[in-house]
Image (cartoon, rainbow, N blue to C red):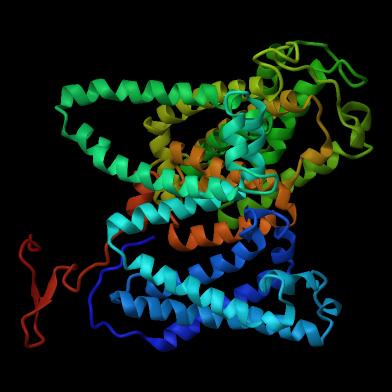
Length: 578
């Protein structure tokens, strides 16, 4: 949570409190009516204490109090009072829903508004407990106000502990099986987790462990100690951190269980494709919504050349087929790019979207059924490395490593290109095509190179994808693939290679972990994107150029070199003459 400066005497804007409380109440009502409260209720955050359905209401109350107190100079009493009033206002809406649902059959209008929602909101008391949401959310809002105005050495560890408790309980169903699968960690798994969430002892242990860890880290102050080292010793420390990071990345798919291994393999695959589109979109500024077309070309090429089933034509090994997939995708990029790269802006996005849809329709049509299999697709695509099921490289692990190596190679190429003359030409086109053309840059030729390279890397991603699934169907060629790759670049930071990795983790990895809440996965996805565009439009890890562009300080009144001598007469500021 953000720091709140304590300045006794600051007045509370109660109209703002009620306004934000009403907005939070509408959110709480929406969460209840779409069924999220009841759907999440079978899963406990802490078994026997609070469910995830009830937690969703608590989070709305916390959010309302946070918005009111953030950046305000309230003392502790006024912050607690403002938070409590906002929480109570939020609680009026679910309380009213409990009463109304007793009198009216809401399911005629809202299919998800079941009678069980009232029991969740009132802790099983039914309509007589309609006061419970008001009191509970008032207490939550007041506690949020007290926490936000506490001293930093109390607030930060407490906030981290509560966040860790929420995440650990939310992902309990994913964290518990890997712990129980090992004889070394089985006792810890049983101590921390019940069948439906955290145990009470596990919740207390999580809170204490995170608080103690934050306090210990603050006392050790590793970052400040490293910063205080002499430059030569600091340079010697960096390789140690880099080696530790590499070892962690290599260990990741083995130490987190088979489900997580599948997730990180998909994330690595999207990192690979994101690095390709980062050249087209992040550097050259060409919004390509048909990226999935080149992905499909790479996947189908590998399938045709390697499949041992009906539509296989060559029975090549995977590694021999991959270069042809990359080259063919690049050729398609040139073929598609030449007619359209004279178009700019939204028109280019629409044209590339059309190409993607053409490829999708053709792949599943009867016209190419004899070649691509139509809806039946291509099956029996061999794995890149044939190993036994108990081998260290069995399953998605080998795809993870292959995608990782390919992503590192693509990142190296992208870094070298960005610093080259061609890369600077791409950035110039992204910033202003007219100025770039006036400087002598051949727009179509330069954009075509970016488009072809992006297509080649998309084809490489499709080839790896075919090896991951062992089959390729037309149903895999969806617009959502292109949107996902474009979104992870924007969220991570356009033109930033580390941003592509972070964007893939947040937009691909995290939603995969929420598959058990599949009905609402894309709701969270959309909320996250809106919040991202509102609070951090430059991305999570933007490039230096983009960050400077979006955070240019507002010009002062005298920034144009003109001032006022006080009598209305304009004067030149010092240094502007000549």
